[in-house]
Length: 344
Image 1: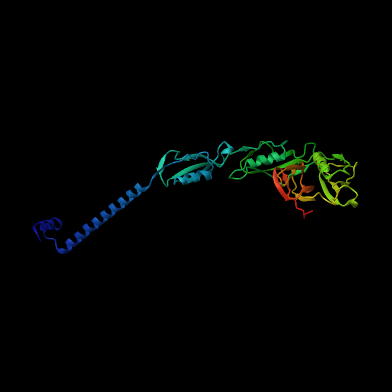
Image 2: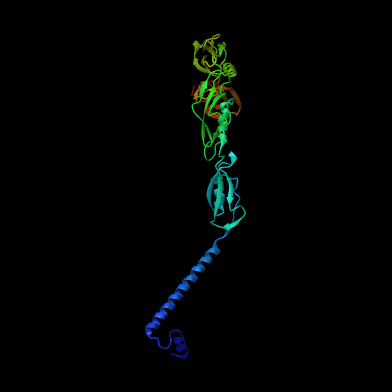
C-alpha cells in the first residue's frame, strides 16, 4: 500500500483498528451513501415530473348549465366538484352561479375547480291561476321544467263542471294562490266545461254535398260522422241522403251529427272517392283541427278547419290519386294519408 493509501486508511480507520471494526465502518458508510443517492434520485424525479405538467387557464363557466360547464372544464384538462345552493332567481336553477378559482387564473392541468350550482329559490309563491285557460297553464308548467324536474305539475284527471265561464277556464285551484312552496308541487284544478243545457236547432243538410256540409259544421264546431249508401242510385253522388238528428230538432250543443251520403257510382278519371276514418285522442279542452290535401302537382287546399275535443273523425274526400291528406291537430301532424285507387 502506498503512502497515500496508508494516510486514507489512518484517516478512516485509525492505526490500531482490527479488520472487523474496519468492515462495520465501511458498511455504515456504504449504507449512508446509498440512502443519499436514493434521495437525490427521488427529488430529481419529482422535480422533473412537476416540470412536465403544463399550466392551463381556468375558463369562465358562470351562467352555464352544469353539464355544459363540466364539459368546458374537461376540455382544459380540469376536474370539477359541485356545491349546491339556493339563489333568489328561479331561472338560475341548474346553472353555475360561482366558480373557484375564478376565470382567467393559471393553474396546473388536472387541478380541481369548484362549481357552485343554483338549486333555485328557497321559497316560491304559488301564483293565482283562476281565470286562466288550462292550455295556457299547461304551457306555463312546461316552461318551468329544468334538469331537476318540474317545479309545478297538474294533477290528472282534471275535474270538469258546468259553468257560465267558457270551456277550459280554471275555476278553482288547490293549493290556493300565495302559499310558500319549497319543493315540486302538484296542483288540483276545477275547470269549466261551459254552460249546462245549451241547446241548438238542427239545420237541414239533406241534398247538400259533403263539401258544403263540412264547411257548415266546421263553422259551428259540431261533431259529426259520415257514412255512405248507394241511395238506390237516385241521388247525386256525394250528397246527403239522410241525417240524424233530423232538421228542426232541438238538441244539446255537443250532440254528434250523423250523415249518410250517396256513394259514387262512377268517379272522374284519375280520382278516388272515399271516407278517411281515424280516432283522435280525447282532449281536455277543444283544440284546433286542420285537414288539408296536397295534390301530386303540389297544390294545397284546406278541406276542414274547426275545434274538436277528439274522438271519431270521418272525412269524405274526392281527390286525385296520389293526393296526400294531412290531419293536423294543435299544430302537430298526426295523419299523412296517400289516396289510392284500390282503397275506397
